[in-house]
Length: 287
Image (cartoon, rainbow, N blue to C red; front, side, top):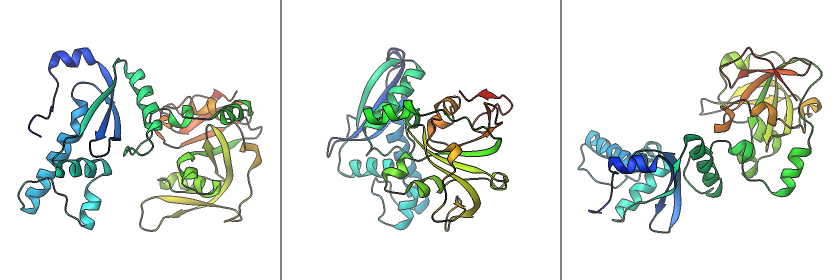
């Protein structure tokens, strides 16, 4: 580990510009993290993990070292990425740092990063890539299905519609209803909305659509889940069901990072954001 490169020279920073990188586990050759940045960003994960460990060992009064204690406390302290880095160092090996593309603009780097995260579902990234929920991998059937659906444009006023991204939960085997209703961090004022609705989107299509009857705090969590009328077998709210929401979510960068939105429809072809945009006054065309 003595020859491990931990930084670039300044002239290399200039040549690289923005770049997208992969961290690879030398024990199995698998990519365990994908990221983007400039300068020495690629090295921050290892250096940050080493510094974090050193501080923990100091606080515990132990000698510096890489070994993670096999305890419930350690499970709560270290992320999956940090655990992998430490296990590699315990094996007296080095994390392999690979720059996948360089010389990019920031927007280009976001797109390349997102595509790589989609391609490495086993990576330890907590967040999906930029735009993955809107423009992520789809087979041709899903593409035809998405772009042939009618755009959402309710003919009645609906003040508060929660828009939840649900592909990950569906991939984990949850039902459409459960994937839509759980588990979200919803502030109290938003829980108090009168007659709110919720839709669950996959590939911009509302596969779930329900009226929210109440919010319930999740046990041993600071998050919430909702229950619809006739829970656990709710009725689908048809005016918002099986519609294409691309025009709405494309106007919110907040959605691109896997966050949920809240919008209001005026019933006359317009909508505005309640959550998910700093601009909460502008009314946009639904179609």
